[in-house]
Image (tube, rainbow, N blue to C red; front, top):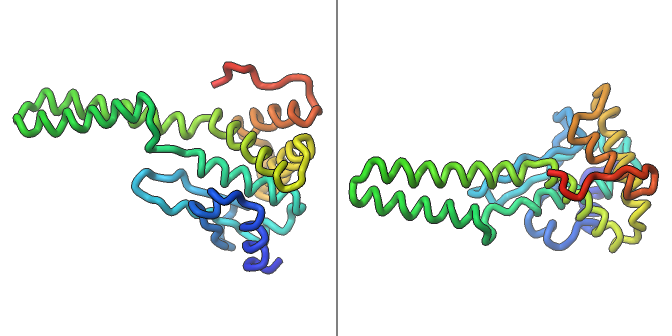
Length: 200
């Protein structure tokens, strides 16, 4: 597999929002088939690292769905969106600045603590299993615009998750992958049991 040709093909598969915010990078030395670091709020670059020697062992539909899932997860991480936690962080920071101007140590500590708690909550929300399930659903929606049916897309993503574990030499899937596989089986019609509506 020629990495540059595959990167060009994958860019065509990606949604426009993914092409604007993410970058595919060849990383032959990594042990993982595909990897992406959790995006930090101060870093706008969101690289996706692929070991193309391992990547070529997947089928084309598996590669498409795996890439779409990672892109959907990366673009789904929102540090700056209007909601209660971002508001609390902002209020805490402004309060901390006001208290610092008045040299109020207790006020600074309270405002800083408030901002820290809200920041941790934002972090956990973006790192949760729910965010992975949402990325799977988003990847399937994009795949449907690329000619896959919902059932086909779910089956390809399911088989890709299982294939990646084997390629990477892992004897079993991790907990998050097991949850995702169960949900994908339900979408693909392979299992009557899906994730509960209120699953967190």
